[in-house]
Structures are given as C-alpha cells and as structure tokens.
Image (tube, rainbow, N blue to C red; front, side, top):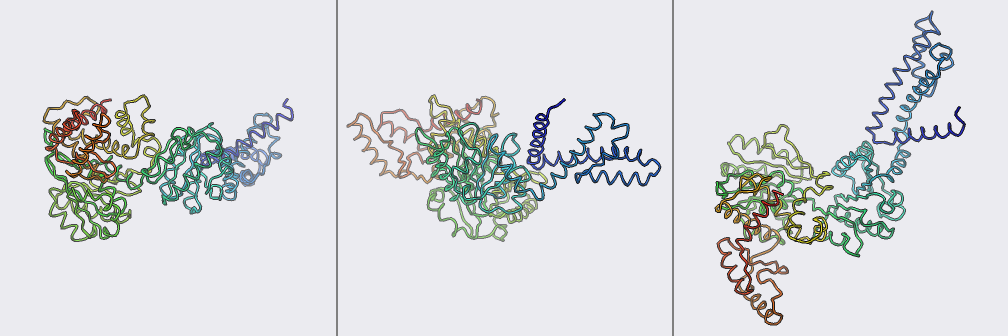
Length: 615
C-alpha cells in the first residue's frame, strides 16, 4: 500500500509535468492537447454510453442525453462516477484508474485552452524560468526577419529563445509565442544588468549563451553589445561560453568586442553588414561567371554587361560585388545603375570607393526601373546583357519591376538573368522555377554556423602558416585581411566554372589555361583593392619609397617598408595591367634583392584555390 508521502510526491510530479507541457512550444502543446481531446472524447462516449446504457436500459433517449451531458461535463471538471461505479466494468481497479485518467486528459485540454486565453502572463514567466536550462539564444530586436530567424533557432532541441525589445507588435509577439519563444522589455533587459542575467540563468559556463543583435537600427545593436559585454564581465561570465552575432560595422566593432588575450570580450564575434550580407549571398547563389560563356583556354567568350535598379544600401553593396566578381580575362566589364535618387544616396560610396568609378565602366542614369529609358537600354543590349539586379528597397516594387522586365526579356528573346535582392532574400526570376525559389538572408546556416565564411577561414589559415586552429586565426584576423580572404573565397566557384573543373578533383590545367586564369585572378585582386578604396601608386611616390627603402637598408641592413604598398594612403604599385607586372617585378627585385614574380604569384593563387577545393 502506498503511504501518504508517496501520494503527495507522485501527485506533485504529475502536476509539474502537466504545467511544463502547457508551457512547451505552442505547436507541441497543441498536439498533446489534440490527442487528449480525442482520447477523452472517445473514451468518455464509451464509458458513459456503457454506464448510462445499463442504468437506463429501458429509456434509450434519456441514456443518450445523459451520456452526452456527462461527456461535456468531463471538460468542466465534473464526473458521474457515482452513477456508473456499480456497473460490472468498474469492479476492477484498472477500469477505475482508466476512468480518472480520461477525466484528467479532459481537464488538461480545458486547462490548456484557459492558459492560452487568460494565462499568458503566467505562461510567460514559466517560459522565462525554462530558459534557465539548456542553451540560451537571446535575440535583441523584434522584427519579421529576427522572428523568422528565432523560429529556426527554436527547432533545435534544448534551445531556448528569448527576445528583447522595447515595443513588440501583437502579431509578432503571437508569432514568437507560437514556437515557444518569449519576449522581455523591462529596463533590466533593455540595459542588461545582474538581475537580468540571473533571471535567464546566465551564470558561469555551465551552458552556451548565444547573443544575436538583429535590431534594424544598427546603432542600438552596438550600444546593446557593449552594455551586455560589461554586464557579462562584471558578473564573471567566462568569455568561452559566449557567442555574439551582430548587424553592424565589422570594420569598426569586431575588435573592441572580441576577447583577445587578457582583454575581456565575447568568445566569438561575427559582425555582419546587412546590405553587404545580401550582396554576398547574391554572388554565392548566382555567380556572374555562371551567366557567361568561356573558351577552352579559360578566356571569356563575351563581355559582362550588368544592370542595377535601385542604389540604396543594398544596391551599393551589389555594385561592389559585381565589380569584384565580374572581371575575366578577355572580357570588358559594364555596369549601368538606374536610380532616380542616386545623387542623394551615393555620397558615402562615391567618397570611399571613387576608384570604382575611376577604373570601371560604371554609368548612372537618374531614371526609375519602370521608365522608358530603362527599356530602351535593355532593348539596345538584349543580345549582350547578362545580369540584372533589382534592389529598390521595397519588396513590392522589386516584384513589380522584376515581373515586367522578365516578361519583356522573354518577348525580345534575351537570355539576361533577373534577380531580386533585399533583406527578405535573394530570388532569380529567370531560372524556370514557378514560383521562383527565394534564398533567405537571415538563416541559421549564415548567422550561426559560419558557413558563409568557412572557405575564407580556411584560406586565411593557409596564409597564416602557424599552429593555431583556423578559427583562432580568423578571430585574430584584421578586418582588411578578412575582407580579402572573403573576396578570394567567394570567387572560387567562378574559377571552377571558368576552368570547367570538378571542384572535388585535382585540377588539370594547360599553360594557356593557367595564364588566363592568372589574368582573371589579377583582375579580381585589382577589383577588390579598388572597391576597398585603393588606387594605383603614382610613379613619384614609388620613387620616394624606393629611396626610403634604400636608406633604411643602409642603416639597418634591411628596408622596413614595402616599396609598392602604402596601407595608410591606400596605394598599391600592382594595380596595373597584367602586361606591366614583369617590369614591376624586375624593378622591385633590383631594389630589394628579392625574387618576386607577381605574375607567378597570381598563378600560384589559382593553384592554391584548386588545392583548397580538392581538400
């Protein structure tokens, strides 16, 4: 026989289990509730149909009515056990236990509905308590993109998702509740302190803490990141337990937030520029080389002609990516930008990347993508156009312009590819899919696993040539070197397309192929530097640096500066045509006594890419 304490203990465990299940993700709790309603309903009809059938054997209508009333009563905490307890079926303890389990299921279903309607506050507190266990994913900033991202995070077992924001719309809060997330917006959360951290169970390194700062206002992300870092440090949270992903400026904010040596910071920091991320994903999914034809010697069989419609933040980022990924041996590059407001929005990119305009055929037209001028431009180049990107900043406008242009291209027989690019995702309208497949931007593949930078990380590691892990070298990598590794890694698929090589196999290249791939690599390298604001080093500056190197060598036995590269003034002597590299190599070797061969360096980069692919 059970003693009293055992009854109390088991009752408490069962009650706690029911409450926790009610606080589960909505879709999971709904499944349990649905099963309970079905089982309770069917079982109730059997139990009470049997009981009242015997009790009122001579009055069928009354038996049916009483049975239905009894089944309804189950869901409002009533039971008619006294009526049916004397029947033969309930003479066994097993049948009695079954009777009460069925009633428990019915009351659970009712409690679930009650909590969904009037118990939101209690449910929220319970979910915050549950967030103290398992991995924690804290998302700062509630918007459609961050909520969709949070839903993906919630699909990982044992991962608790908590959103922080000052104001949350009812529709977005409902969406968060539907996958078991919870929102907080009090002052302790908005300016994180010890109370907030302890309330989420952020103590020590017992589990992993992932922080995603995805507010649309990047300045708020930065402010929150530094406040969170200070709170974590004060409360002694080990950096190794933390991971930060933030929308902001990687150039400015990565180093101050990253733990380095004795300086406290997050264990791992990934800062993404949102427009830049959109543009990179466009190139990842749809490389310009895939829209072109190439000869057997790896030279281009046609020019690369492209159009950007819209020149906001995304359009400017797309321009940079097209410049970096649209340079091929034997091909001329052309880009037309259609944007009625480009003079108003292009100040920063014009000031910081003027080398793009100075060195490439980029022309601006102050017309809308729906204008007659736009269609006249397309018609005049219908046989040469490769790549059209629509990024107006409005998904509705993108779809409208994209649909019209796609239909027009079909009518005039053009093979140009049309892409939509925005924060909601990347879409190709001309690849034959109906409806077109959209590639989302804010996904766990991109933001969590570091997949988008995995090749760049390995490439940077190969340059470092030390005993650190690729991740350690990447964490210590300066911003410019990261951008350089990314630009090279992002172009790898294009190299494979041009060379017609299997990326998983060792490449077999003829001398002519390697020569043209080397030229393409040099063009890509120059495009990257021009995009980063570099310009060709003037002859008089090179002469001055040559004299400075010779002077240093006479004093110290070696020159301390690089003659052909000035990182402060952003000037590089190698920003010259392929045909002039041999002369530059000979001159530098005469100065330094070295054995540099810039053409061979570009060819070696091609071979390194092939080797990295093969590995």
